[in-house]
Length: 601
Image (cartoon, rainbow, N blue to C red; front, side):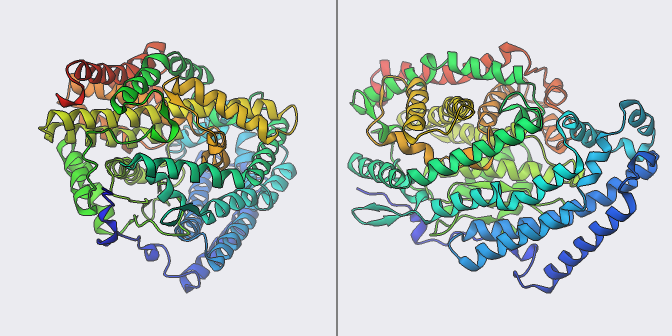
């Protein structure tokens, strides 16, 4: 029986963007646009060519002006981006978004000189200025800006790259997003959006899963020529800029932005890759036995287990589950998360034209974050809610750091989200009395962890090989499919059959287009949280205050500084093994249950 989500009979929330602006033609928006343009022009007139002559207090004053402009322009960009994410199919909304980005891009041109001139300061000169207490406040931001000083270009080159971005990478990304949003996947009972067809891959009925899998791959295959062209163009565009900036590795700029050493990322990738056999291969072999299939078809990878009640969870219940889990850990965390529901900061309704997937957008410190979901009522959707609320809480707690220092690197941004998932999972596990459903819940958590760690590292390896081979010339669709299949097969193991058509599934992984080399941040965050949670289990008494302090630090501290209070160091190879061992332990528990009569307890 199809246990369809109760999302059809309940009202799922839409966000209230009026907290930013009432409408695209709102007078307040026009006023802010004019103010941003005027302030940027005044800033350029006042400071261009003068940064080297500013003392510490004067440089701090300039940075405060720059920060205020960053916040104002971020508010405008956030409004346009969120409006667009909620309805990519509307041509008027799409035009408003594009026009907004182009106008902001023009305004930002007046500000480009500032960080370039800061980076021309000698270390000794800047250190002398940092004796100013007001400038010392911005030390973390200055440290991050100067990370890129060896890779910046002459002012005119930086300006032309900036000005052309709206007709280059940004335009290609928009084409990809709108194409993906417009896709419809035919099934026996109609046509589905991407979010809806992906949801059916977790359906109880094997025939429904197969139909969904074949429709997903078939529709992506029909559009693969466009996706291949977009991929080749964007990777070449990145390679050209990397070459001019003297980046020696395609991922180097991402590592710098993430404030993480390449050797730390390599240690993570190596640890996960070496664990394929004991983690994903081992788990999917066990799941194939449970499902009575050897091997599992690809569309069965996220299928509910036979004993899974596959209960759909209404929105109100999902909210209560997550807030209760957060509250058991920290009342402050739950109170912060509750604001997202009370003040209409969430858009959860799946609908045509809306961006698929989920995100929490921080906006700017003068406003508040917004969360986008496509809530279908499954247990995994509850975990997604917990994940995005973790991001949201993090963003609210760090807002006091200001527009230049509130945001964290992607690697640390995933910490709060994955920790929120872990709190919710552990809360559900404690409340479940039925031993069969406890094991079903544990299996679901293992699958989520494998998707976050193994799957994302497989994505990273695919992306790395893609960028490396593109440097030798344009990649054919056939070669992209081969690279995808090889990296997927290595990570999933012999218990998963890569059915015909799965070689096209790379096409809907939007991180490859939006943020190259983003994906390893998920595995980084999962392993980091697993290690953190082990510390919490061993000494829970003073953990929550230290954890909240970590979130409140925003982007002011690096991973070594943030983890030091917990006695953890991501630079140590054993750190990643410790994180992976928790997944191993969960799989061992599942195997023990299977050995004693499968899921029947």
